[in-house]
Length: 186
Image (cartoon, rainbow, N blue to C red; front, side, top):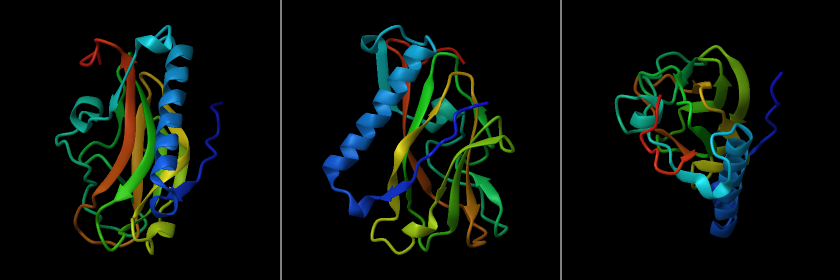
């Protein structure tokens, strides 16, 4: 049985930029520690930390954060347009630390991280509706969501409004991989 994720979303507009950096550094450190545990790297100095790229890492068609069209209220949709789930390469870990919803009014209510595909086990879930009345529709996770190499990842949002069009839901995420293996094996 996996570790249960206990994390809350902290709205971006109530934390100062310094605290945002602290949460991002916390995510990097968690990813590097896990990469050492999983023997992706042997020491921190061997880690390359970069931003998650939709095409390279999720095998998405576009380097954009677009969901599928939100056609049915209460239905889960992937945040990676046309990609329901994907497997990480055997030399990469993914660490998610934040979310921002560009589409207004807020068309989604939940952000769900799953392992094992689109119907897999829930790794973490965040209530996005609390962001609807904020000046900045985004937040940082109090604890990062870390995925291991070869995990089958699905990240979904639940439609709050059936708009019939895509939503722009951007995730803050890092990839941790060995230095010099940017285009490593899949």
